[in-house]
Length: 452
Image (cartoon, rainbow, N blue to C red; front, side, top):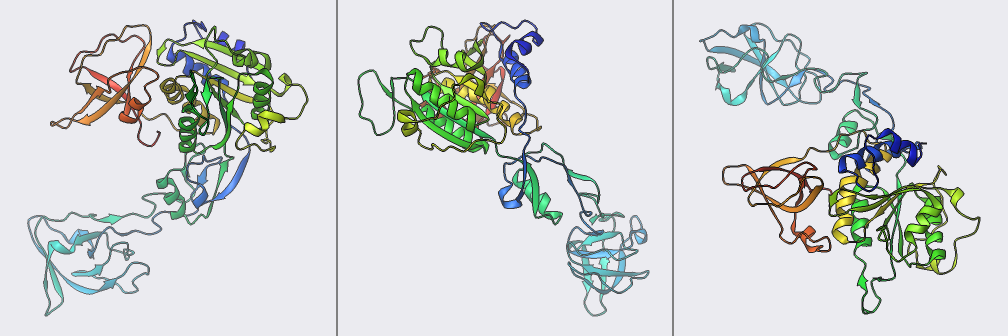
């Protein structure tokens, strides 16, 4: 388990007050580790989980050579270029059972999609490429519409018995569940579900149901983070809003560190903020406070909250009553929790989560799947950008009349304009060294579909 200082020493040019987005990602990759506990679950419970061991195919898929379509099976060697071929139909092969007869020269077999190809037959002609003579049971195949081997699926074409069907670290998608089922397997071994606790901080934050008061705002971060975590498939531990009081903050961090693998907070990480969140993070763990060269989302705290940072006492009182899902269960591993202290502005919370926290949590879940590639789209407008920071601008991606992707911003890019995240379907990613964008320039886009 590496300390903040050890990881910082590994990164060239590390400066906590001027980190690039790339350095942040590299730091987090070194900080977080996958959970180790595993469990066996049924396929229906496997969606979104991460495989803890390879799925080895117990059989070949398909188990036999079979027909790829309805038609007639024949020996393809009988086909002659430029000449039609007439064959006698000697039977019908149905899917689900082997045909027991034999097919000789000048003969063929009517066959259904998925039916086993009898020995000696290697080609299937689609029904629509033939003419039939009902009176004598013959078909004629037109010249040059078929080649030897057409429309035949080979045994093991999808998966061979003994081969790795899905590798450890694979995120189980709907397609992956179907693949497991095609092997006749009822269960899969997955890493235990990651536990993530989160809470909002600040005396200016109102919970839903509280009456409005001057200078206060209703907490939106609690709900956007809940949605982002739920979409990710982790076990969500909602600790509500924690007031800016040392005792309440310590109780919240202690509870979260005992129960969760990761802790996400929003607010209280900027330099000079008049609250106790930043101080409590320092006191209870090994935490770095960053100023990232990005927009939005410059301030961020990252580290590890450890049990050794707490006094031995029970969580009780006002905090326990305020945590909406308070329980005293603990996670299997007890080495503390990774902390992601996010800024307080609503858009900055979502952007830093998408850019940094989500990839880190996927790694903690055990996933080895690479991040989805950024899309390239043509900007329909000029975008001002100074080199030296990464900008994530909310954008709307559409398809141009010529079929290419195009993107425009949603307008006001203020970090408190949460409505822009609703209007957008992606983030325009303007990289660290990139400058102004002119209309017609290609830009990278991180799409939201399936994430937000």
